[in-house]
Length: 199
Image: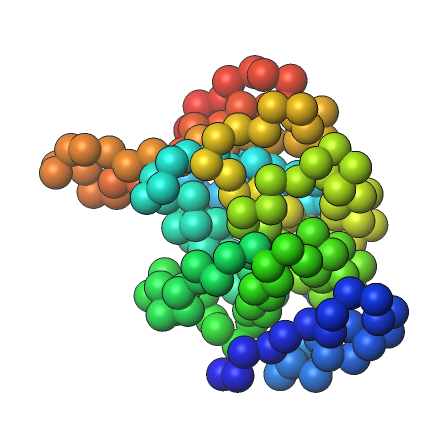
């Protein structure tokens, strides 16, 4: 599969949509729902809302999002990151079909790329890695996620401080140190209001 790149900022959304629609397998999204189940937590992941997943390097943030995407193979995944850290073979090894993934390694334009991806309404799952969005960008992402009906994951090493008002769900990823654990990845979930849910 060829790496797809988005047009640079300054071009209108029509050009971005043209590029996105040229990706094989781009079809209309499945019917809208308000949330999707996720096997790592008891709560469903809300659509049209922001979910933060935090944890240090190697904690399993990316793996958790990829497992969520693999559990919903009918949808498409947009992986937007500031630095080129994505490793496509890892996506495939977790069951994510690469022909359903758009990789946008956008550097300092990652915020712009995230908004374009959401405005396309073509992706059921959008992962934003390394953005550390400010309040204004976070608000724009929140509004576009709502319009698109996408599950948007913000992957952060540390929980967001000022923008927690925009989140519907907070997840914390960590790996179990037990060698007996059948699945070393653990995810704890909190609703945005701070209520802890079993995970």
